[in-house]
Image 1 (cartoon, rainbow, N blue to C red):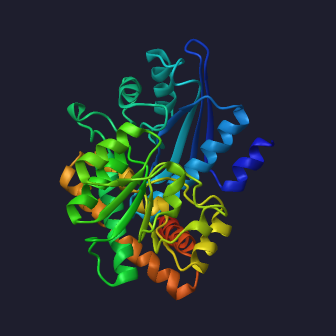
Image 2: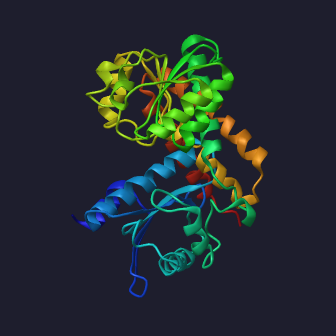
Length: 356
């Protein structure tokens, strides 16, 4: 792999390789785009098979954050970081403080947060070395667990989809098949239950399934049966890549609207395939932007009500995307990309005008 070719292919502004021998830190920070504002994105700790895999992952994820922030209307760019190591064995105060010093050295161009393999507690160590960190506990002036806000945004995104397909945004008596009932999935089921929706769930964790069944009267199916459920809405809220050539033929759904990342295995193949089946797809990075919205609000002094209202506005963003999709005769995933790209480009032009 030619490193600079990988970076150039996705249009990144800056990629930083971080090495600290005392702590054993090996990390990569990728800043994709800062036209709209500082690059914000979580730090993932994972036992990658190779450094090449780590680089590809951080480049892909940071680019995705650019699009997520732009489509959500936030004054943020896209960034991400990966720490190479086993999150079960290699964590230490020293490691995260060393990482925090690298974040600090970027002077605010990159702002970090927790992600897969890292926790709020890990971010507290990072915060000892830099102020450029979000997703910290409420007691330290942060926003705490973003899951309820992510779920709220997903819920209102669903309502936009239902209004588009059925002419009303009520979810009462609508059947929703939820794949994954962890933090976000659980809160989503709670909102659906309050709305009067009929819920069918699955998860590899039987205890989580039982909790949702007991509390919200949901039905449950085995993990591989969720694709065959007779429901109006499919809500993938766990794994990515689950909308693919093997699962799409099974779908009887009218809408796909869930909180999982990277739901389409191959965008240019699976997006049009959903259109052919007349299934409305809510682009994942738009409908699940509530978590990013939540931590974004920490930057200006966290206000819970403001964060919740912004998450609810995902409804209007999706309606705009559906309109672009119809007017330009393109799949919704492509419409969301165009919405994000046009916002970035328009701001780029404005910022090229120097005021003396």
